[in-house]
Every structure is written in C-alpha cells, then in structure tokens.
Amino acid sequence: MKILVVGNGGREHAIIKSLKKSKNVREIYAIAGNGGIADDAKIVEGIAVTDIQAIADWAKQNKIDFAVVAPDDPLVLGAVDLLTEYKIPCFGPNKAAAEIEGSKIFAKNLMKKYGIPTAEYQTFSRLDRALKYLETAPIPTVIKADGLALGKGVIIAQTREEAIQAVTSMMKDKVFGKSGSKIVIEEFLTGPEVSVLSFTDGETLIPMVSSMDHKRARDNDEGLNTGGMGTVAPNPYYTEEVAKECMEKIFLPTMDAMNKEGRTFKGCLYFGLMLTPNGPKVIEYNCRFGDPETQVVLPLLKSDLLEIMVAVARGDLKYTKVEFLKKSACCVIMASNGYPEKYEKGYEITFKCKKDNVFVAGAKKDGDKLLTNGGRVLGVTAVAGNLNKAIKKAYKKVKKISFENAYYRKDIGQKALKAYGEK
Ligand code: AMP
Ligand code: GLY
Image 1 (cartoon, helix red, strand yellow):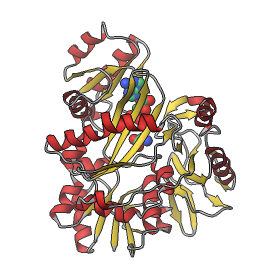
Image 2 (image 1 turned 180 degrees about the horizontal axis):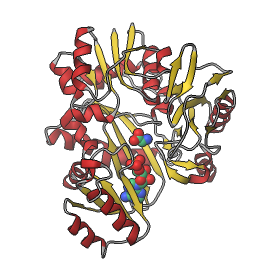
Image 3 (image 1 turned 60 degrees about the vertical axis):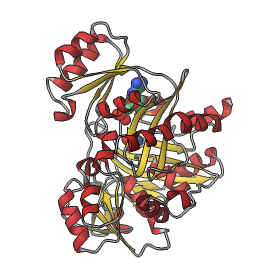
Image 4 (image 1 turned 135 degrees about the horizontal axis):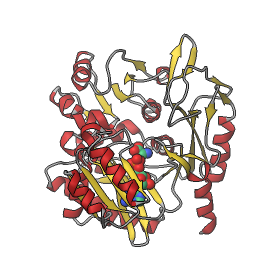
C-alpha cells in the first residue's frame, strides 16, 4: 500500500518507523516531514500540515491508499473529512470528533454531562465575569484557553495575582489569539500523572501501554513547561486495578458519550489522567497520538500498526490483535540548549550508533549532513527487559550522539524507578 503520513515531528517519525515494519506497506510519503524522516519516507515538498485542501488534492492525485493524520491542527480543521470525501481511507477522527481536543469547553461539558470524572470547573467568555469569579476562587487554580495553543494554553496559578494576569493575557491581550477568547477555570488537582493512548473505532476501545511524560525543562521537574523532555512506558502508577477503573469510568464512557453526541471518534484517543486521592480524573483529552509518548509506546507494539489503523478506519477493530511487548521503554529528548525559550539552530548532528529508535523532531538535511532545526531535536528511545535497563540503554545511546549546544535531562525515568521501588 501507498501510505501518506501528515506531520513533521518525532511522533510522526515514530509512526513512520513503526509502519515500515508492516508487511503491507510499499511506500510511505510524508507531508511535511523533516530531515530525519527523509531517511524513512519520501518527503512531499511545499505543503504545510495545516493546508488540508492541498493535502487532500495531493493524496488524490498521487493515488494514496491510506492516510494517517497525526497532528491536532489538521484534524481539528477537518483533514479527515476532506480525505474521506475524496475516498481516501484514513486514520484519525473527523472534525466533529476532534473537537474533544479542539475545544476544552466542549470536552469539559461532555464529561459533566456523562459523569466522567474530571476537575470541577467554570467556563467564561467575558473577562469581567472571569475576574469576578477569581476574587473568591480557591487558589492554586488552573486557567485553560478553550482552543489549541501549541500546548501552552494551560496556566497553573499559584496566587490570585497570577490567576488575574493569566486570564487577562488570554482574554484581553489575546496571547493565544482566538483560542483564548473563551476560557476554563478549574480546580487544581494533585497526584501522579499517566498518559494512556488508545485505539478506538467507536465500538471497541483498546488502550495501549501506559506512559509517563516529563514536561518540565530541568531535572527534578524544575524549569519551564515544555512539549515534553522524555517519556517512559509502562507507567508504574498505572496498576491493573487503576487500568480497570479507568476503562469502566473513563475510557468506555468517553467513547459512548461521543457516539451519543453524534461524534463517533475513530483514531487514537489520548487520555491525560491524574490519579488523585479521589480516584483517576481526566486532565485532558487529545484527539491524536501524544508526543513524546508515541516514541515509547510504538516501539513496544508487537502487532502490525497498519493492520490496526486500517481496522480502526473500517470499524472492525474488535477482530484485530493489538499486543504489546512485556518490556519497558525510555525516551530521552535531546534539545537545543535554551529550549523552550531562545536557542540556536543549524548545528551538525553526528551519530556513533544505529539510528533505530532514534526519532527526529527538529532537524533538516544539508547534503549528507543532518543539522539541528528546532527546540526539540531528537527523541532517543531504548527498549529493554526492565525500566532500569531501558534508561541505561537510552542514555548510553544519547552519549553516542552529538551536536553543539545539546541539552537533555539526566533524570528521565527516575521518578518511575522510585515508584517501582516503593511498591
Ligand atoms: P499542557 O501539556 O500544557 O496541556 O499542560 C497540562 C499540564 O498542566 C498537565 O500535564 C498537568 O500537569 C497540568 N494540569 C492541567 N490541569 C490541571 C489541574 N486541573 N490540576 C493540576 N494540574 C493540572
Ligand atoms: N505529550 C502531550 C501531548 O502530546 O500533548
């Protein structure tokens, strides 16, 4: 089959490397790809991932057999609806279903309506009302822009002043543009966080192996929030008992709720969970694979990814095998020093190791050379029999890759190891 993957980050590289193992894949094309993805797929030049009309036109002209739309923006814009109209089977939710990530207010109201556990909240479309509410709101409090905001639309305010500033910057100063014209203010929850990605066709939902993200820039979860500095899978806090509870109270009710709303979700539904003292609660939904969760989850997938994706699109997931290795994975993100603020690009990346399970996020080709071209540059993943070994193996590999100004956290997986120790 001739496959198209839409997206240009480390997540897409992991999807492409996994699809390459599928027996029915003949060719893979990437829009827009990156310099590392170019080693594993043919790059389609000149089309942006948000230009859904150009994507659908290109896919039709080039007789693509199956498309995978990975990032949130084209999904929320309706890429899958357009591809479907052009009779190209694809993996990903349509526009109506992608709203579960596209609007936080939609997601919160859905959970409330169907009794799915989440933080208590209020929604606001007027600045004066939001500010009035903040006068008596419990602190800390969490402020969220309604729409997509490049993963930056969530602010945890530790003081009332910070909360007022966050609300004002979103609603008055429009730092996130239209995405912040409506907001959610919600209860601050505590507890370990777990990411669970799932495959669903609207009838069957199969959770993938759980994972743990490391969002802060510096060791010991200090520094600024980032797009993710590393991941491990499975997540030790996600015990069989917790998994059962999540399936019953969160995953299946969410799938059913979307069906009842006439927004059947087909694709990868991502559950960002917090295991609070009052049970697991949803922190966020994503309508797609997580980044960098995918970089640890897919290397552990034993089954054929294309087969699963095709089954999701057709609606016969219940007949399909989805199995994961009983092993552990660790992904260390190598970033440009200064990320997520100011950083330099254009440095040559050299490898003294094999590139399997090295996922390129921000790099471009310059002849035979690979140059850094983003904040997060590489995701370096290792798989091993247990977490301790996977961590050691990942860092060993990181030491064999170099570029000027490289920065990475030294403690990816340590919190998870400690959690195993405590059990
Ligand atoms: P982001 O990836 O920017 O959406 O950041 C979301 C992060 O904010 C989550 O991973 C949590 O760590 C944190 N967060 C979101 N909502 C809450 C909440 N209600 N209580 C506590 N932390 C939250
Ligand atoms: N790792 C969280 C996300 O992909 O949004």
